[in-house]
Image 1 (cartoon, rainbow, N blue to C red):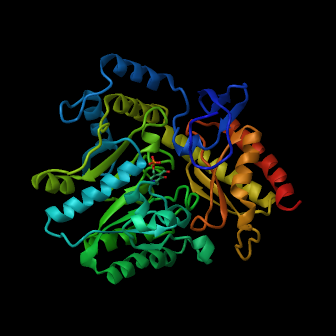
Image 2 (image 1 turned 90 degrees about the vertical axis):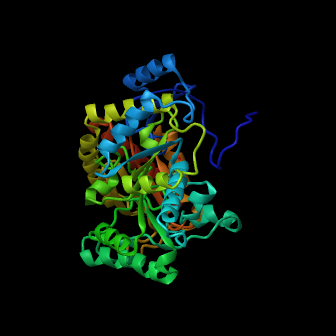
Image 3 (image 1 turned 180 degrees about the vertical axis):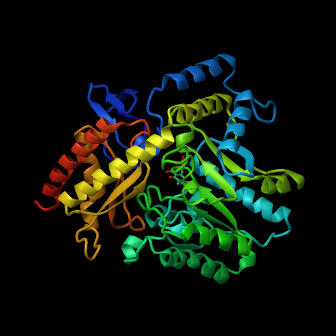
Length: 440
Ligand code: PLP
């Protein structure tokens, strides 16, 4: 009898070891990690250089409390992140995960408002669907009703605008009017709330688990930047999933030349080797907060030297193996092959993504975009069938967490063409079997 408990889901076998893009259970069954865990293991499993860097750090120290010591590893990782992120975002605050990073970014923005004599600003606008974490603050900006509803009385409700799902609304994502249409919903919401109350707007540059690799329409990013500037709203890019090369650039924002005021990262930064997250903020934000007494916030494990040494080695691997470029080239091939599967299997209603953040969505009818009936729990069924074939993929409900089903296909950025063949063969066979369950 296990004493562990997690979220719901099928009981899985015990993991024995993992190497590169593969994982083995204790029975010797091999799995291709087609979702990099939860879009985490960007550089693959058991990378020898990262393990060696961790061993070196462990020999020196594994903990130095931030109020007692700076550490070489945390200084070096902060310098590297400042280099890799947009100009002027040079101040780095470490945490141990994505939810912590989102909470920290929102609290930093709030202290910035207070420090600059705008104490009436506290609302953080976000989008629905979206996922920004499971702690109460991060959940308050998450737009995904099945996760948020039970906790509504415990949270400060935050305003939401629709995510730019052009494909569902029958709009052309390549028409700049579409991007403006969705971005202008931000301005309308700011005006409804009263601009003097709005602190920040938080986005996933490319949607993650909640929307299934949703790429924003042309013109959207430029317009939201303009709106945030016009109304003095802090723009927070939640790059927890899109960061560290996942979409083919170091940050997802780079695809549109978008410069946020605060970036949050986690997942691919520790890459499954250590729990690690970071808030990378505009100098002017941190300087203002520090001038007024400092950031009233912090976690015991922040800037842990072992975590930072691993993170630094992960960033070295991303650079030395050219993993952003590999994510672009293999991602293009993967998306083309997913379109091939869509031609063969009518149940796939949409294919989307960028780099190796890719997804397909099931629909009962492509012309009406009707989802599969929710009681089929199609996304979980598909994941279980693929798992039984040795292929790990990730899935969620697409439409605000209550209907629709998408499958995220997000292998480590180290994959080559043979892995793509293996993934597509596994998905194809799983889709055929899946249909026998959907239409017996
Ligand atoms: N933000 C985004 C975009 C995420 O995808 C996630 C996790 O999936 C989080 C925040 C929360 O990260 P964590 O699970 O590490 O707390």
